[in-house]
Length: 74
Image (cartoon, rainbow, N blue to C red; front, side, top):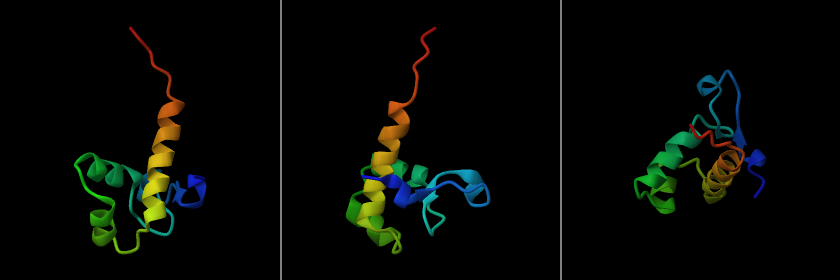
């Protein structure tokens, strides 16, 4: 999935944190809720402007960011 169509970073919105385009919903918030066992349906009910594709974009974005991290072992 091309998450760039659904996620943006703008220094004027949420201090530049990645958010769902057209909202102020941070990627981080959705990831935290998913890690706390929230379902897609629960997120869609809690955030009426959110779409299933937005949640999938969050997961894709996260995988991409983590995939580019470099582990430094001390």
